[in-house]
Image 1 (cartoon, rainbow, N blue to C red):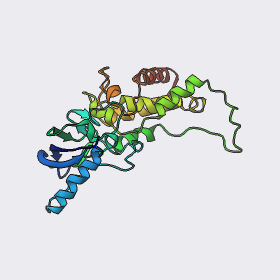
Image 2: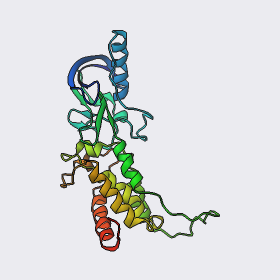
Image 3: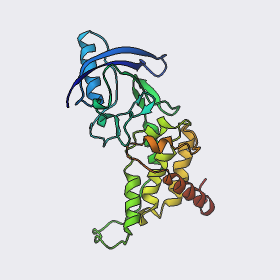
Length: 254
């Protein structure tokens, strides 16, 4: 049943990466419970604009839980209280009238705050770029069944490939580790025959770049798995560790 609620928002405002930020209080009144969380912020921003005040800056694009652009810490939880849900998929029916909601950006050394809730997540792109490309022979397209891949292996690879790179795992981790993200990107190729030729180079390069960018190490707290909107399993971290160890034994790359 649709109803309207009134909320008190405590939103992190910061003009730039080198400017001191602070929490500011706003009131979101007559918010429909059918709205998404981002639509609620849209309403608040419209009111701020009418009052000749600067609207809240936040990341968004597809608003369908696919692009990985949106993200904020809601009352201490990355993407909010609902499991397996991105911020744009979080609906206001999960909140109650007169709730106080604290909205903060991702917190990590590798994620510099650009403005308000917008952070620079290009470090994740740098990790992917370090993995390089997959060698595929050019020429005519192969028959669909020419490379035999067991279904359970294909499913595991697809589960890892579901990662949208939103950075919630980093924001949720007490060490700001990117190991769940990195392991998902390594696993989706390490599990498949197409990813085998560069497997050793990929594992070493991506882990080394991850460390250089200032991400923390994994201490098996499991917050990353709990807050991941695509429910990526930490089993991928174990697989990445195996790939990295194996690569160190057989590869000459440092």
